[in-house]
Length: 469
Length: 53
Image (cartoon, rainbow over the protein chains, first blue to last red):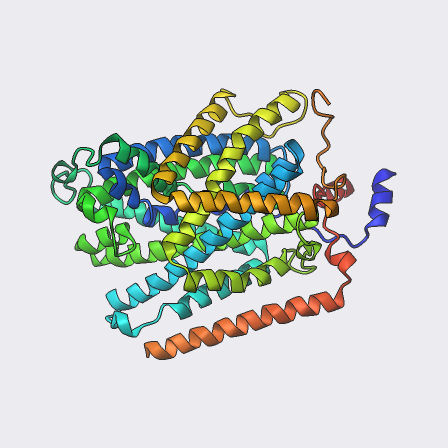
């Protein structure tokens, strides 16, 4: 009876489509991140040397393993678009939800702008390297705008095709790393790989290792994006943990292979301050194999495209979800009646992404993204403690229960604090400016926006009252 | 040759953006805001279908 009444009240409700499986979730998470294996991570080598970068890769790998475990449990239970935003509003409260939503929107929008900027540069480099055009006579801007146009169109016309394209782009990019690894004959040390000659001690000591944590994030930044597929998963309780855990395993393997190949063929001073943008592509160029040269160009390009594609998808869901609860203007909560996508935000973000991609330097865009991402990770342990305390095991149905609680939450919190300090060493002003921005935004939300929030309707999970309330 | 490709890229981008803006405008005209904003978190369209089988 209740169902019939509900159905009559909303005969034309248009919701997001539930069409995604574990492979799409994997493609979303790994697709956003894998570009970090092709570029960006190498600045960790510049901070701490090759071995310092390896230590940072392990430590940050542990951080992200904790992120994946915690996210898998909570998202398999809170199956709603918005990911960590939806988790925060159900588990902690509106102010935290607003902040987490902003972290997500900023992290993904900035990463998307960085990705399409990289696509433009890569096409320019490819035209020079592979086709022989004069680098100075070619422009990168048209390819930035065209890649954004095509990816925005994909996202506009439906999530299934968007993430199917992401699956194949990501798979080819990952395959290129594996092929490169075998192409440089790891079974024959000294022939192509020269670790014995190239690996040095820690050039800047343990402080350098500490500073390397900042760029170690690049190996894995964005895996938490799998949560944004929650509302569109056919079976979120199964697909999200499976996609997220296999995603982090893929990234740990890719990170290991990337480090091993790059520091075995290039001196750490070059890898650390690579002005050629992409160290794996550089390795392929000096391997002497034309096939590897072309394949790594394709892999690098596809990784950037997959990342931008996934970021558009995730930023759109975060913004859409906040609009639906009136944390932001409801206008953006519209769903396309034919394609079932949050189409208004996809159109709205196009000029923003183009301005950042064309006019803001890559390093600054990336720093905005990293800082917002790290703030999101710092929220996760607090969220996990609160979730287990308010709804203990057995009180609600969980799609996945992560082991060893509260150890992953404690480890995650400690590593986040350490990484904040590492970022402060290199980008202290940006970190403080970002914090100030979020404080001002929080004041705006409390004073001007909270009165519009759907305070009761936003809680949609059929859970019992939390323990102690 | 490369110069021509760049102009094609600009033109294709403009066409795609214009189509999306036009389609977004058309959808806004053909449907009321109540319908477009009717999405609800936690609603599972697959459940009624399963019950029908």
